Image (cartoon, rainbow, N blue to C red; front, side):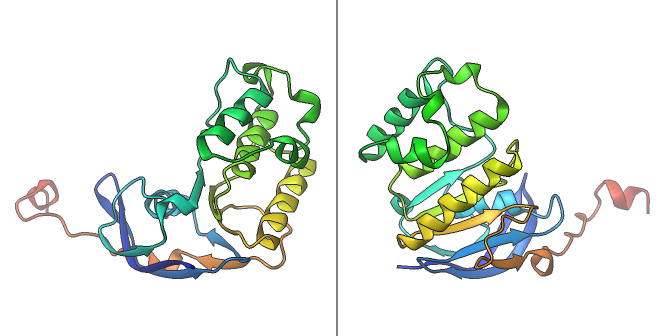
Length: 207
């Protein structure tokens, strides 16, 4: 099954930001969302993930097939790296965490409490969580924040491996991940038209 978005309109803080967005993401494919800051990339991802309702349009994909990674890492500070991953593996009903530890170079940190990790290490652990979800469709909002070049390469390799297994990734990022096969969708043409002020409102008083 594909992830489909049809004629979607979304708002942030009650103000429309994007309209008439349509896209299709098939298993084995990656799509990168581009556009200036504030255009609505995060809002679009949150809407597709089911965290907020759209203004209009339709999203076709069972929610249980989506794994969303936003700006928060979703870590429990008092648990170790391995305990965090085991917690999420139990939540999603998956198995061994060894592959996730290896993919994001966390084996040497497995017993360290999450609160003692650097920002980059926490980010790698947050991304390793995706690997134990068993979900096919990854929705990723600026996944490489706080990562150095070596860690970005690890993440790109993890995405490629996910695609090779029939997974898919929809990512908002400003940097080149080095995933040449990823398609790019510029959201600028989908910017919502400005809404007119209500009659008798603040702006009219000073017209």
